[in-house]
Length: 197
Image (cartoon, rainbow, N blue to C red; front, side, top):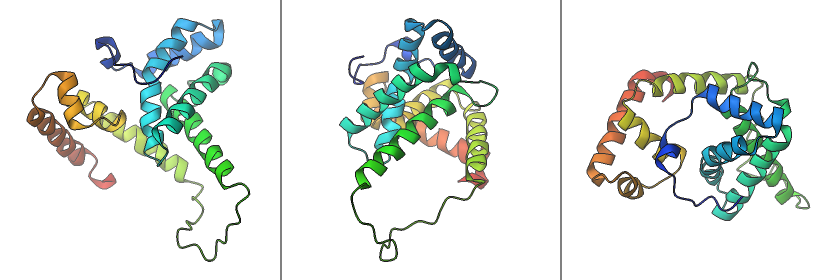
């Protein structure tokens, strides 16, 4: 599989549509299509790694879990149903569940005194997943209102976790232009998603 640090090509920077991603998973399910899987891996591996690193997982651990998540996609592709979940939601749910399992393994054997813990969080309400799905749908719809240039810097910054300087280098743009595009995009998203921010 290799490492997740490969520099993206121009075709990698082009966002794949939800339908394209679903077709890739279905090709893996139907024919164990290695080319489709490689395309899924190239698309999702850096995004999953960035997502996992935002859960305070070190880079090496995030990379390992991202690879494990994508291997799970390979094995469980026949279980994917585009009518029940989009490809991204399905794959990120796999990654999130692996992260939860990993955290549980880390805690196994430790005695936790929940009453004394100031960090204890109440259980997640049952409707939280529905609300999260609705929020994700609204955010995706709002992203479609950004210009291509704004969307590209937002994806690189927030979904792939890249620093503004790295984005400027990658896109061969001045740093100020990158920051300006991100600021304009965030203002537009704030206007569209006011009640979510």
